Amino acid sequence: MDSMWLEIILNAKSEELDNLCATLIANGVPGLAVEEEEEFRTFLEENRQYWDYVDDELMEQMKGVSRVKFYVTDDEDGQKQLKGYLQGIDLPYTSVRLREYDWAHSWQKYYRPLAIGKKLYIVPEWERDTAEIPEGCTTLLMNPGLTFGTGSHASTQLCLEGVEEYVIPGRPVLDLGCGSGILAIAALRLGASHATGVDIDPKAVDVAYENAALNGIGKDRCRFLAGNVIADRGLVEELAQVQAPLVLANIVADVIIPLAPVVPALLAEGGTFLCSGIIDKRGDEVAAALERSGLKVIQRFEKNGWIALAAQAG
Picture 1 (cartoon, rainbow, N blue to C red):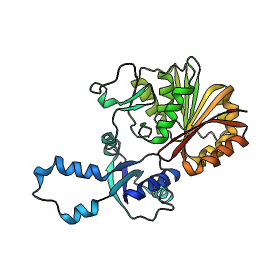
Picture 2: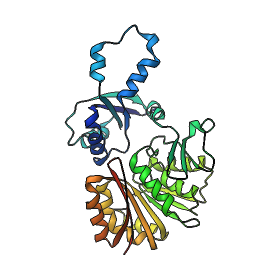
Picture 3: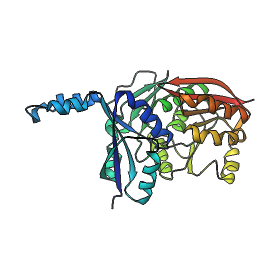
Picture 4: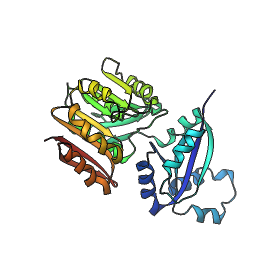
């Protein structure tokens, strides 16, 4: 029997949208869907045969309004998560109950082929035979399933651009908070020899392996596991054996800061730690935490109010 989920919907004016999304992600929401006013107008145009007119009041209500959606399980744990996710947000919300199948597939309409950086072209698995891929691009097939990491968010794009720059062909990479596996798989597609990914959500493991398989990558070249790198010393010791020249973390500032002291033990000599998911106003705070941990920030990427930092052992 399918699990039940709640689709949480918040309406926001255009000028509120960036801060709302940033707050939700900072509160730990692992993924968002945004429906903008233009989508509403397109929907009206494409379906005008179903009505004679559209109420002027409704048009006025939707003017400048976007809808932000995310999902929690429809149970006690989901209610606790929801309370934490909405901290500091003074907006009403509505909720819709969905089966797990509907929850997973509702994301597909927000996920389209996407060019990133100089080489990568991310293609949803359901468009593998229809997407037009520019010649010379490195294709990355993805199916986010029940976890997140589609490449559409600015923080993921920044990290992918950094992967292009810092991956070393023939050498391993370590991805902390791997989610859908997108960063690790991108590194493998760009020539990394092996990728190890860790995520606190056990569902991420199967999804990451499935996405790797979509790209013709077997378990001989990747390993994904569930665990908490900050709290599990045994896990850190195990990961330290990899000694990767590139360690990735696309999470949030509140996780990267306590993670920073762990990173030097995981890096190969002269290696690079690439972290993203940082709201611009917290960039200096994260950079300071990296410096305190013996990591020197060597590059700063910025996009749409988000920051990624590349750092090396000092």
